[in-house]
Image (cartoon, rainbow, N blue to C red):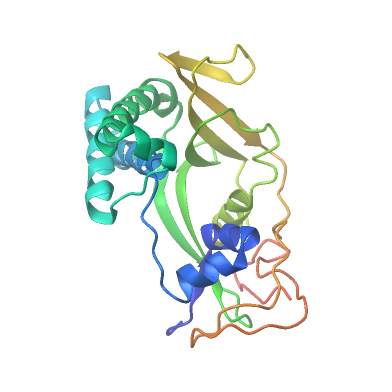
Length: 272
């Protein structure tokens, strides 16, 4: 592949919201420290990853306290490595208090993950990286899938401030890219289902038996699933204002999305 660049689902999502922000981040190299919510998500994700990696072989979850410790350590590592930014409201409260509250929330959400999410999965791959080769495009696609399990499910774990929309999984660009990645790794075979598994911090948990799996204090697990075959072209209208290998933006007429319109075959032929 040489030095061919790639795009990820998160890059495409940023592009869809604001191409200028994407250019500042990936062309100009501006890196803005994460907010408290992002740090919280990183911490909880670290706890889940630590547990699921060992569970591939052991088929047993770590004790909840071990998952919590890994989550808090992940939170601290990113905070110390990348720094953080506060909103105006958080700045008024003060960094020490905000970080203390966030640390408690990470521990709470990680414990909920250990008791309500983790037992539902026997992972076969964790943080699996797949390169989706697009031979005639300026970029390939790169996917890092949170989890694949022994029931053929592709899962992305998230934290959020509120209940997710029930159609979110069916409309997810991220799951679309993960589906393409699964097909590349499995000779064109699709996953049995796609799942966004949310841990949500709420002041008053909603009373919904259909999607609510468990509660711990004021935290809630929400699951949004899609068993339909997602079309492998994202809803994002990608125009040819794309980075060249030299890092210079070029503009022009609208073109088909970079994401394949069909499941990639083993030959990985150019979908266009």
